[in-house]
Amino acid sequence: MKPIHLISPADGQVYAERMPLTPEAAEAAVARARGAQKAWAARPLEERIALVKAGVAALTAMKETIATELAAQMGRPIRYGQGEMGGVNARTDYMAEIAAETLAPKVVEDSDTFRRFLAREALGVVFIIAPWNYPYLTTINTLVPALIAGNTVILKHASQTLLVGERLAEAFHAAGVPADVFQNIVLDHATTEGLIKAKAFDFINFTGSVGGGQAIERAAAGTFTPLGLELGGKDPGYVRADANLDAAVDTLMDGAMFNSGQCCCGIERIYVHESLYEAFVEKAVAWVNGLTLGNPFDQATTLGPMAHARFARVVRDQVAEAIAAGAKPLIDAAHFPADDGAAYLAPQILVNVDHSMRVMTEESFGPVVGIMKVKDDAEAIALMNDSQYGLTASIWTEDYDTAAEIGAQIETGTVFMNRADYLDPALCWTGCKNTGRGNSLSYLGFHSVTRPKSYHLKKV
Image (cartoon, rainbow, N blue to C red; front, top):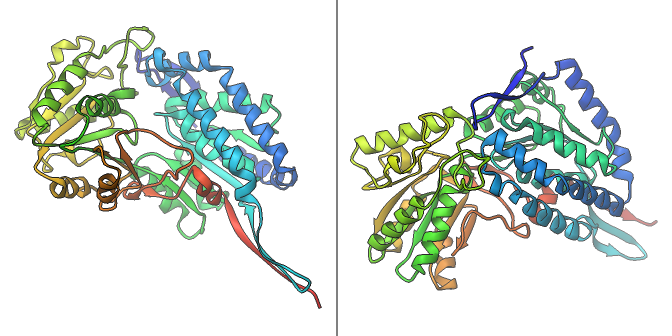
C-alpha cells in the first residue's frame, strides 16, 4: 500500500504522511466499533451527552493549534482559522439540548389494556467520510448526534485534512469517549469501497463531489445501507429592486469569496434586478479589490490559496472558457500579484455571462462569481432553478412574504432572506437534485442516525 500525502497549498510541500490501514486492519476496526456499540447505547443519555460536550470542549481548547494546522492543510488564512469552533460549539449545544425530547418514546396509549409507543433506536456503526473545506463543522454535524443517539462512529477524513480526524479523536478520547466508540482511521479508496460493499456500516454520511457520491451509491448497491449524501452546489443569490444594496453586496460577495470560495453553500451566481444592477456590480468590484491574496500564515491575508493546485485549475479553465465565449472579467489579476498560476488564485467577477457557460452551471468551488441582470422575479426564479444542484438560495428583499413566496418556487434545500452561507442548527441541512439526499442538524439529524421501533404491548 502507498502512503497518503497531504500537500500543503501554502508552499506545495508535503505537510503530513500517513499509511492507510490494510483491509484486515480496517475490518478489525469496524469489528471493535460494533463490539462497543451496545454498551455505549446502554449508557444513560445524559452521560453520553456529557461526554460528547466534554469532547467538544477539549477540541475548542486546541483552537490555536487548529488554526495553524488548517492554514497549512487547506490554506485558510490564520486570521479565520479558529472560526469553525464557534459553529462546532453552537451545533453541539443545540443538538444536545434537543436530544432528550427528540429521542424520547412517543406514547400513543398507556392504559390498563394497552401500552403503545414509538421509540427511536441507534442504527449501530456510523461511517463518516468528511471533506476538507470545513473539516470540523462537517464532521460535527453527524458525529455529535450519532454518538449522543448511541451509535459508534468511524471517521475517515479527507486526505487534504488528515490531521483534523486525529485532533477530533484526541479530544474526544481525552474527554472519556472510549477509543472503540469513536475511531479515526486512514483508508484508501479501495479499502473504503470494500468495507461499504461488505455492509460493514449501518449508516454512511458522505460530503463531497457528485462523482464521489455516485461511487458511494454504487459500492452500497444491494446492501440497503442508508446513505446521507451532501454533494455539489451552485448556490444563487437574487437581489430584488427593494433590496438593501450595501448589505446585499457585503454578504453575497463574502459568501462568494470566503474560504477562497470553497464552500458547498457558497454563492456562485448572482442575479440582480436591472434597477440595481450597475450599482451592485460597481460595489462588488470594489469589495473584491479590497481582499488581500497571500500566504495563509500572514495575518494580513484575507484570501488564501485554494486547497490544491488542481482545484484552482478548474476555476481558471471555467473563467477562460467564459471569457472566450464573451464574458467580461472585472478584476485585474495584476491587483493580486500573489497569483502564482497554481494554488494561489486571484478572485474574479464576470459579467456578460449566461447559462451556456460552465462557470454559471457547473460547480466552481473557487473565488469566482458571475453576475447577471434580470427584469423581474419570474426571470430570476427560472434562472435560479436552471441548475442540476439545489442546496441554498439567497433572496434579498425587505418583505418576508415575498421571500417566502419566491422561496416556495425555488428548487433548493434552504431559502435565505438577507443572508447567505450559513447553517442554523435548529433547521434541517438538506438539498435536492444532484446536491444529494438526507438530513443533518435539527431534530431530523437525529432521525438520520436512528431508526423507529414500534411497541404494541397488550395485557390479557
